[in-house]
Length: 271
Image 1 (cartoon, helix red, strand yellow):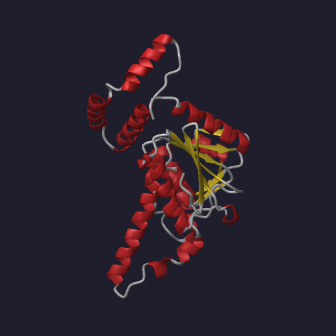
Image 2 (tube, rainbow, N blue to C red; image 1 turned 120 degrees about the vertical axis):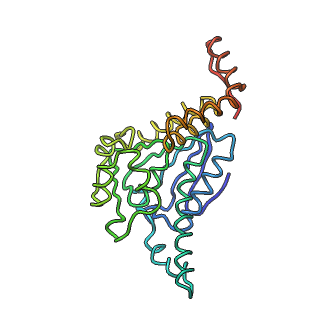
Image 3 (tube, helix red, strand yellow; image 1 turned 120 degrees about the horizontal axis):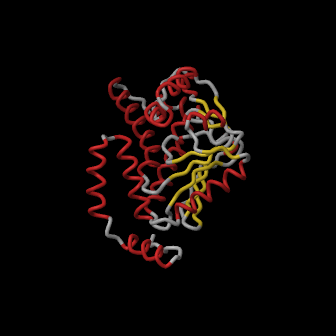
């Protein structure tokens, strides 16, 4: 089990739980957290026993977004006598931060985000990479980057429109206004709102357990197909699933699922 400075990770009954763990800093995303989020989801991806992941957080806020101390220190991080090389370093840094969040999509296992309290700025970038999002009734959200004079650059403007549409994304990105759990549900950002944080965790972990009981090979393939279909044409995606199933369909999982169905028992799958 990996150990981290800014996260805590556990694995139980095939469910990996990744918790943001800087509660005294409102889970502000410092440089260490950015690196460790990628490491954690690379670990989930590589660990056969982990069939699904839940992303949640300790403390009052889910996350207050990117750590402003990290932002203030970027100048030193990219310093160079040559203007061109300095700009190249900044571009590479942004691309690296983008890749950290993409690690949730790249992870072959479904990622369920369980959001409570504030989910601000970079938190929106983070949760839009999850497969599904759920929140407690006290949750609130804001695309805060516009209020610090910058363009959100690590995924919100690219992923959020695919979840909630262009119109509402533009309104939220241009104004930076705060919206609550009910509105997040109404626009389709979250699948469900739970009455309390305890109910949120119980409900999301129950969903994760249901996913973990399915064929791991089929779940991984389903995530691959859904991500591909989001970014490609219907024709390309149909061609891809035909090739995928030509390779993966004749699996032990298929036979176990069919046999268990006929025998009216719960199927048992390899990790």
